[in-house]
View 1 (cartoon, rainbow, N blue to C red):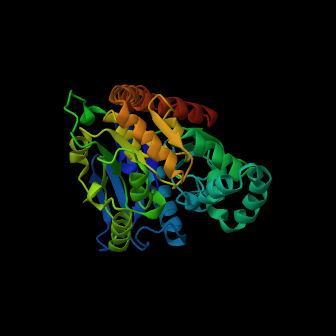
View 2 (view 1 turned 135 degrees about the vertical axis):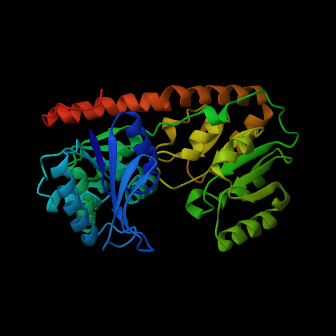
Length: 388
């Protein structure tokens, strides 16, 4: 069997490996490489076609023409079971391939519409009447992306919030969305009894960017009652943002307790999370599903996070951590203080959170959800052959 994937942005390897485990052969059509060394290569079991004549990383008319032409040749040789793409990548298949309409198409989406989140957050109750009007105005600008979603047999979203958000955004012809998260292997985060560090350490992991909440970290730290607590910041950042964070920490008198550790390799992250008391995630960026929050919970850390789409799939108030209103730094500081004041409660929350990740996001659980989904789609299309 073949599962076909047009150009796909990272972390596409997660899905490719999952489909391989499920028994599919995976073929990927992607844009040209910057060094123009293109062609067909095998990468971790996936046949990857780098398409000459396209622009690296760009889903545009050049890519749509090239990917549709290559798909038609490959499909004629050995039919694919379905097409999977993200964003505008399937536009060429819909409008250039001679097989359009005969092969199921799945879109895979991981980011909540930023404009919709801003409307819902800033105007509250007014969002209900404003959203349809704004969506209609933006529909012209985002026509290609919108039509790719609406033409898909299913739009697979990383969280229920995202699935509902896309339906609200395109309310006059809502895409057929379904929530299926990434599978997450907790084994690298095996928890063993550890001695809690003498200086209470709270961890933030992520890109050092303003929408990820990095500028809120020194302010939250300065509001905490536990004056010995430290926040360790793990992740890459540009010089200007790092300098701004340092200046803010110095101005608030917390520079010695705000530790900017820089980026860390994924393999070492479990050991870096071990021994911490809590995980802080004051991001205001609407995400489908935050991988760093999954990692923190797999490491049995209670989480304090801002309420953004996708967070409540993982963090449950007073169960696995706390969700506070976006930019409510006083509330975030208070919740962190409560966790430091009650280590047994924090430990219990962390353990419950880890079990929640195991039960909900285990790879075999997610693979079964994909099997059910693909079965439904293939049956609707009248297809009968698929991996068992």
